[in-house]
Length: 283
Image (cartoon, rainbow, N blue to C red; front, top):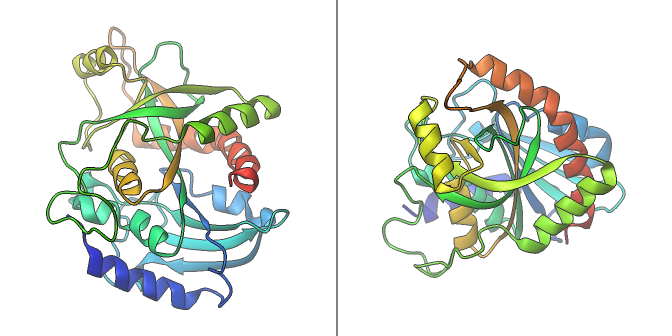
């Protein structure tokens, strides 16, 4: 579903909270996933003119129902480059009973406010046996295994063509930039395919084995629909996953949400450093 009117009203409401000159230059959009909201606090010293707007103040905007997703928009300028950044601090998910349109509303609001580049972060389970919990991964491609699409229904030509090309969902130049920046920072950055599932249940050993055979390197419950919506809008996308657990189908161990969040918060230091270094040169 393409919720054009809801997006327009939410974008208008968000715009009224921002400084008059805030949108004279297109911002970079940044979505922060589970346990990664603290990145905003870590970036505090890098952001000037910071404005925080609760999602609850935007008409018809879905408020995240998970404690690890704070539910704010944060606008600011990177101190050194003066690059404007619009951050969605937390997201909602299909497993909360949300529609694809609601899941992708943040992406569409960012596009309405001029963002042409989107950086998506998430936490994911490692399927590739070479990857370890605590690693971060640059997403090279994705598999949408949710069974849903944010483009279902009548197409809004103002947003994009009805059958957007997905041969390169993640911008190759942005991937190269992220990999080169990580090398300069001496941060280990893996590269691989992300598979998005509906959730909320975690995957079984048999599912883990099947997804790995499909070519997936990491698995999560977000992002894939956001990427589809962003590409429909013509946005460039960079995706980075924080790998919080390792799925080995022949010896899988139980994992809890608390453990996932704890690893995300620890590994978030490297992700934060990478994002802070990439954003000023992303354009």
